[in-house]
Length: 72
Image 1 (cartoon, rainbow, N blue to C red):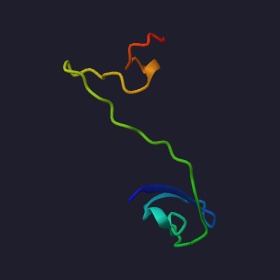
Image 2 (image 1 turned 180 degrees about the vertical axis):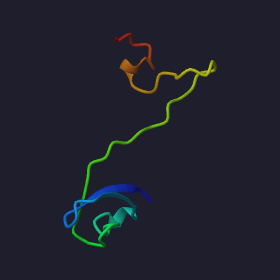
Image 3 (image 1 turned 90 degrees about the vertical axis):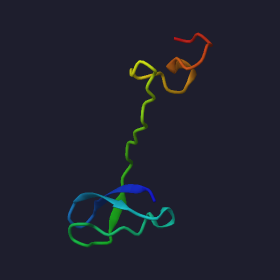
């Protein structure tokens, strides 16, 4: 189940809710229990791979250094 970020139209509280994917528009405000909420665009993060030396290794994408095409 994904975690979505919302903002309540009634009290302007920003909150997160764990909502089933097909019901993302059915969240309830954590503060005032209002149902008039807007889903916000959120930033996500992905874990970085670690190399054998413990340093962060390049992750995906040709220009990220993960291929040998030579783009820099």
